[in-house]
Image (cartoon, rainbow, N blue to C red; front, side, top):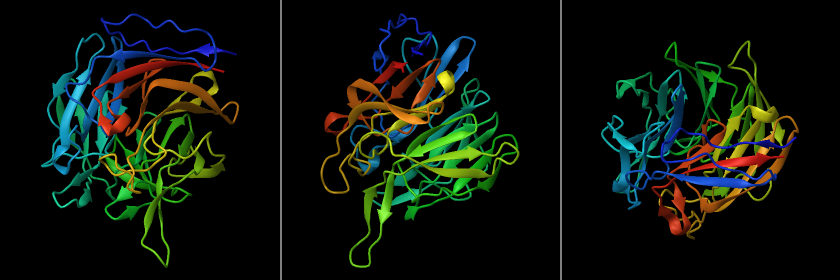
Length: 358
């Protein structure tokens, strides 16, 4: 069955998107630009009766230097013609590679890392809940193991998983489980593959899909190096004990491994996890690859169908994009906020897109 998905944010400046009913069609619509370019920013959305409000926190500004790490936060309301700047995220320094998810009308912001003038990086344990009505941040229980470039997903109505990620000097295989009601942490079944950072994935019901990222290659004869991981895994959460995840290997997605894709799960049409953009050349925060070559983004969109148990190529974006923390689900469509475009240019654009799924 062909099912048409389109983005329906109730923005006064935008009319609904007309989509041709042809599988593989991607229809895009620009939203208002952010007040300034930002990349590697933590993003989330909150739905209400009035529509969907988009959020962006932290990240890297256009200079791409250590001093361009940002504490800035922005929101775009359901009928707003422009983003508004929110109070900055608490902390003495800006940071990037944080994660954000929305639960019960609050946005939870996790970790990220700071960059010092000498280039040294430090993972931060900070956890804050942002209250959009009061425009305030509430400090929550810090992460037991501080991580950045982790995958954050919401399970049920109160639980958040942080899957793998980077901690100061290396990747961790931990799956840290945060209870938003109890404000407490526990450890879930560890990630079964090579620990990674900059990976992507999503959740539908009890099922997690996690792919790619960067692993550390260790050799007795050479310095350790960063290399792409083409591994994908499916995790089945035990609803009786959410700390238990049964992990299974999954065939790799179409094409080569990607770094910092935008991804999200959607429950419609049997359940899909959608992946967009990213780069096939892992890179440092400034967009320069660990191999010394500039990284470039890709425009490809693909997805894993839980009903079909297979990967499908789903089309291409109008513009290639990379350096994303997540793909925002807004209604029945998706939004990319900020990121990097060609030539590692930090972008202020926000782009909604719809898909025609097979």
